[in-house]
Structures are given as C-alpha cells and as structure tokens.
Length: 404
Image (cartoon, rainbow, N blue to C red; front, side, top):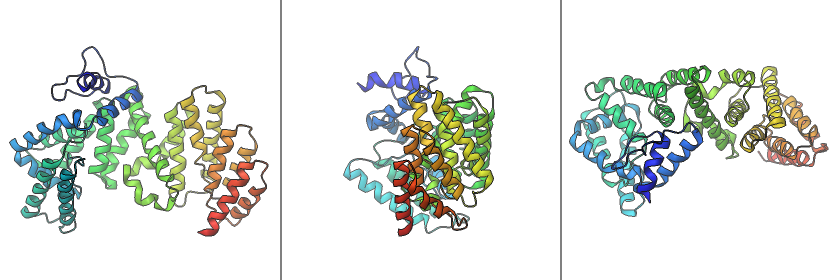
C-alpha cells in the first residue's frame, strides 16, 4: 500500500524522490496548498514505513562517510544552544530509553558550557550525543532533514561561516522553492536563529512576498502568517493569556508576530478567503498579548476588522470562509469599557446566533484594565443584556475576575 501511495503524494507535495520512490510521473505539484499540506501530513503519518523511515539509512551512512560534518553539526548545536538533530523520538521502549539518555546528556552539557568558549571537549561530547541519537532513532524529521543535509554540505568547507551560509540557503528556498520548501525554510529559520536581529531578514522576506505581486510567493507567505495566527489562537485556548509570552516561541517571529504591517493590506484588499480571516484573528490575538495596546487607534482598528468580518459573513457561501470569519469574533479584545460595549452592541444588533456566540466567547475572556475605571462597570451592566448568551458570558467573566 505504501509503495502505491508514496509516489503520488511526493508529486503533489512537490518533494523529491526518497529511497526507491520517485514522484509519480505526469503528476505536477498541486497549486492547492491545502492538498499539499494534506499530502505531507499523510507522508508524515506513515512514520518509519514512509519517507521519514526510508531516509534514516541514508542519513546514518552519510554521517558515517562524512564524520567531520557530524562534528560540524555538534559545533553548530553548541553555537546556537539548540540540539540540531534529524532524529525523531522513537516508539519502542528500548530505543526510547537510549533517546532519553542522550537528551539528558545534552541538557547537562547545555547547562555547563559558555557559548563564547566552546572547547574541543564540548564538541566531542555533543558529537557523541548525536551519534547516540542516530543509533536509536527509528526515523528522521521529514522533510526538514533534506534541508539540514543540504545546509551541512554547503558549509562543509567553511564551517566558521555556517550561519551566513545556512541563512543564505534558507532565503533561497523562500525565494525560489515550492510551497513545502517555503514553509520548512521559514520554520527552520525560526528554530535555528531565534534572536531578534537574526529574525529580521526572515520577517522582511516574508512581508515582501506578502506585499508583492508574485502570486505563488504571496500565497505561501499568507499561508505561513495564517499559521502563526492559528498558533496564537491555540495558545489562547489554554485559557491563560499570562502564559503566552513563555509559550509563543513555538514560532518565534518577532517581526511577523506584530502583524502591524499586514492590517491595512488585509482591509484594503477585496479578499474574503479563509487565510485573510485567520490573519485578522491573529492580529486581534496579538493586540491582547502585548502590553500598552489599548486606546482609540486600537479600538478603531478592531472596529474596521469587525466590519470587514461582517461584510464577509453577509456574502460568503463557503463554509470554510464563514468558519474562519466567525473565529475572528471569538477573539475580540474586551479590556476597556469601549471594547466591552462594542462586543455587547454587536451581539445585540444581530440575529445571527453564530455571531452572538462569538461575541459571548470574547466577553467571557474580558479582562477589564484597572486604568479604565468604567470597564468593570460596563461588564456588570452587560449582565442585563437582551441577549442571553451575553448575559451568561458577562456573569462568568465577573466570577472568574473575582477569583483572580
């Protein structure tokens, strides 16, 4: 079955041959990004029976034949404080115990050295950790390992310039690669180069694509930014916004996370697709995540976003777009008296129960700011709303606030 499935999935995802499997001839990479994502997802779920497992013997042999590059990988891991490994957590108990032991050794090493004073002993210890991981893993990260191997090869002759070489390679993938390569390159960059200054070129590149006229690049950038927004939503659903600053490194894009440069583009364009709505949701989540983001300008922007969403809901017949638009209303800021009033008025001014439910959910997360003395009073008044879901949400919010 896997022999039958792998070739067409490789072709649809725009991925190269793996093992004995070639992309199905005559089947081009799909322009439908959802299908590309699903194709990669299916390949990933094959575990060691799929590309991730088929690549493992090749990777083991490569590092056996090129031991110095494994030493380079150890050096790079130490230089950035992140264990850069193609190994995936194994399933079998025996292999898992070895994997866990290797990770413990890495954690001990990570806490014992100075990144500015990496010694030969540190590199040797880290190299041994890499060897242990490769010996016990049952599969490799796919397709990230393909890009990792390519970057190692490019920097083989000048390992002291690895960061510049790797960043150049990743930018090349962003500017010329197909969709999966674009997403993988952006994610690898955020993991490998998390400092604000290092993130800047990535943010500038993706924003350039988003604002540009090249349709594929623009779609790839939009898709990636939408994924950031979904991450923020998933973190919000932990129901503890105070933890967001610790967890948001999941996709640590300091420049893109602001989403400020995107808001006007979204509102001006005549777009009404799901990704556009998801990005608007991300913008609202970001507003709530950052401090000092209240005031007239923010309230006006929120109203513009709500207006755009309502326009989309009035005309769309596509379930996916409607769901994404409604999601925006589930994450409206409710921190000031004006914001809380706006949510209440939106709910009371419609007969659409889905819109009312979204408003109620947002109101349930109300977080009245102490500097706005009227905010809590407005929330108390919302208990008298003509909309039952709003009344319940206001009551639940006040109970929660009283316990905090």
